[in-house]
Amino acid sequence: MTRQTPLICGVDEAGRGPLAGPVCAAAVILDPHRPIGGLKDSKKLSAANRLRLAAEIRQKALAWSVAWASVEEIDALNILQATLLAMRRSVLNLATRPGEVWVDGNTCPALPYPCLAIVKGDALEPAISAASILAKTERDKEMLQLAKYYPDYGFDRHSGYPTAEHIQALQRHGASPVHRKSFGPVKRVLTQQDSA
Image 1 (cartoon, helix red, strand yellow):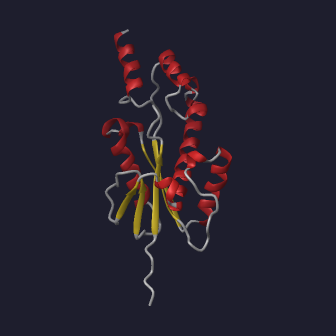
Image 2 (cartoon, rainbow, N blue to C red):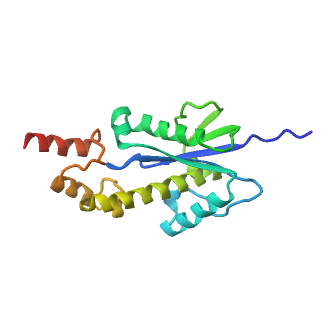
């Protein structure tokens, strides 16, 4: 009798580095009988390819889930703990229980399953690549929505990352409610506002 291989769940996040917006995590259990070609680290794919693959992952994966940690949680906990919280939520929201969880990076969230942290896992393991693609496309979608509410900052162009354009907008307009107050560049702007 052959031993069944455990169902592997890949987990990754998007949005640790930005100055604004929530952090997003995704968990994906791929179906070995329905392979998806072209999976790799979401940062190595064009936006169009990410969207195409994200749709295919949703269609073919055995299970997938996306979860968030809010700006308030990021400021209260710190970005690492908020990221681990979003990862934990994404795994616990899966409709199918995984046998093992493989996480991109060097830290595992607290989970009721065996968990393995894999540095550069999004480039090495298809399930983690799939999770990175879902997390990135979902977060980009969220930042496009936030760009409509806060048009002064250019979120639709840089997704909240600390580009020169974003820093200038921060200095010109101050921090919005979706900026991470615990992050250095935002903190500095808030300090300037307070002392003005």
